[in-house]
Image: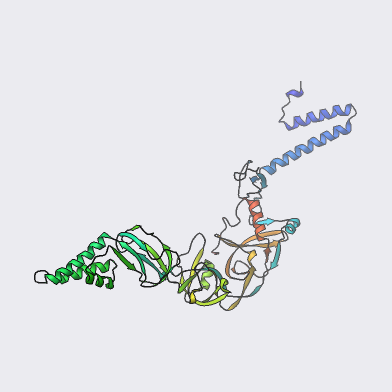
Length: 431
């Protein structure tokens, strides 16, 4: 009854209970067992005390989704797996991670000492051929009516200048044609004694021209004095049909688009570039366009447009060249390589896999000590084959991770629960 009154949360009283229990065991000849119980109890208390200290500095994350970061145990909100505890080392360098020799071996982490090498200002961009928007023509309805006949019905058909495109029935246009015929008849019979019919004829003729009738059509109308129910319209440009917006029997409003024509005598070669590459690109600079689909045919050109507006999210820009399309061998949508070349110069270069880039900037991993790796923000320059120029952020003699940078970044996210670039001071670094 005395032992039942002892409080369980009192450490000294619990020890007293354990000691008396061990004395009873020793009285019955179980001294080794008594010693083991006492030792196990002491170790258990010590282990429990140490566990409490460690758990105070834990947060919880998902092994499959390390971006999940919780302050207490639970399940991953993405996959439902149980969160695991990760130790927060508040006194350690948050820009570093530590790997064991086994982790380095399994991750195939390889390093190299930074040295300068010659790299040419040879910028190779991946681009696409597109329509020359300056050579696109829209054929619009000049008057409201019903299109009863289309003379070109397929996408890609070639239309020559002067070809008949469609016939339209328009009461408004027919009335204007009748007014013109009536003015001609009155001019020939009544004369200009009281009313100046010559002015009325010219006004009616001008109205027909504004509605798209040609001088030949107006002359034929004046000679025949017959008003046809349908009026034909002709193409004023040559090109390939890129869009056909109406079918036979459709009504169109005045100004409505009937079809679009593209003159493919010249095309645009467009490519996207990073903002850090823009200083190496000047307008009117010579460049070559390589066409892989045509046995790597090379076409010389000049940069005639650089987009003045940068996309703030992707940090990329657009450059454009206009190239000649002889024999119509080139087609919009073809992939191309645009090469801009300048003289070589010495600079720090790294393999492409060593540099991690996103919308926040570019970074590399530096080995500061055996097994210790630290992230470093850098400014990149031109890309040449599989090499990237580093214009600032690194010095010769430093040891950089050339293989396994993505694995180090994943390990950092797993340990710290956030992107390695998030919250870092870019210090003017650009991608």
